[in-house]
Image (tube, rainbow over all chains, first blue to last red; front, side, top):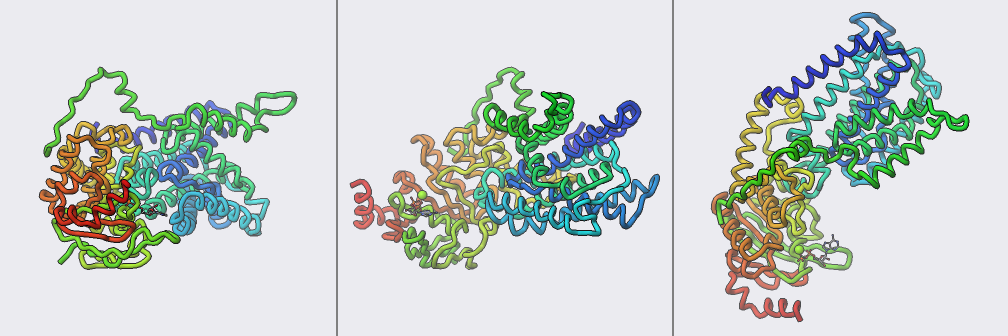
Length: 335
Length: 254
Ligand SMILES: Nc1ncnc2c1ncn2[C@@H]1O[C@H](COP(=O)(O)OP(=O)(O)O)[C@@H](O)[C@H]1O
Ligand SMILES: [Mg+2]
């Protein structure tokens, strides 16, 4: 397998696996478990897209649920108010169109928020994005054609296993390719040291805006998937706690580690479901979800501050099992 | 025509005048030094030239164009590269990737090229990788190319910083205390490397350095700062025997 098309082969394998898995899953998994699986996929898209912003470029964004809301509302409103429900190929095509529309609207919002706020350093962005998320929620609550605080209901259920995980596969392809390329190195350099990155000609503001816009796009797409699975979206679904939940996934997984972040997204989405079954003195443990998140974060900070898979380097890991071949130090050409 | 011309350059931090009306010129292909006691304002001069600080007053002309008000990355892309007194590598990137970032601006691969990685992306990557290996080899760092920058020795980190700066293909290289923390052998190697860089890449180099052997050994022209003001400039011989300079340095130790 040549290096050049390796990423395409992985993507192809991923997509084939998604399609291949979908049939046995649809046939054997009950709808309750399927809901968990789809929710895990949507969480993974949200976490991996925030990872582009928080993990790769080191910009602390607390408004990811806001972008998800914009995508969810754009896509769902288009389907319910403009297109109406459809079937067969028309349905799949329309779904693609509304998902893209949701993603693009969220990306434009990301651009509008990102250009002014990403020039500022550190905490400002956290505050601006936090405010943005809340403003979006309040605006949605007050738009009557979009249902106000009751939201949009009766959204046809177009989201499937294939759509969710197919989009996730594309996002992973984009993240991983970006990471190994000019842009990815620019993101990481910006994260590591902005002054040094600028000193070698990297326009750090541009890189931050690009990461932010791509992240917002996929959050918007995830919102569209969410709306078309739940049939109902309300402004409340996209509150501050949702943003925090996504941030926790990124931190828990290890900032900048795509696979770690996906793992954390799966664990944290499954956790409440598992806890729901545990009953303690008549109280379901899932009511303590936020407490458990906080506890998990504290434990992580103490025992593994780099995140579950942060700093995990497959090559280095494999190298540990090889013979200790000490390489000779080469002499400088000029001395 | 001079490569860099700074005129009446002044930087005030609140009540403190860190750099006080400094005027100086750097010629193409020259090897110049900027010396002075600690806190004299040397690093601040570098920070103004590279756009990290906006001067309170004065002009900076590079290739006869004013660069005051430009962003650091714009100045870098016009041909001024630098290293930092407190090493600023990208700690989580490999040595190779640290240097690769220096080629980002020259790379023709855009966002979609980075994602889709068509054939010409790989062709370009190969060309850049060859250039990086050439530079790393020159500095004896080829064996460290996949190591994380933060795991290198202090001297190696300083050298990687110079390689990263050279990756931007500068016309002027600013080195802030490049010999700090190096042993005598490394210092001699460094002096040879600096001369070699100037001759091989046809660039001008301005360096801040405390080690007088290094400064006097390689610089053709030296400017001396004390309390932000330029108190002397000239050949190493002239500077060494200047009573003002001797007083400034004695004042520091006394
Ligand atoms: N960002 C800053 N804010 C306030 N004071 C500064 C800043 N940068 C430098 N200074 C002050 O300016 C003076 C010159 O510092 P610097 O240029 O680093 O000196 P040198 O490099 O010659 O040792 C020092 O007194 C230093 O404390
Ligand atoms: Mg200094």
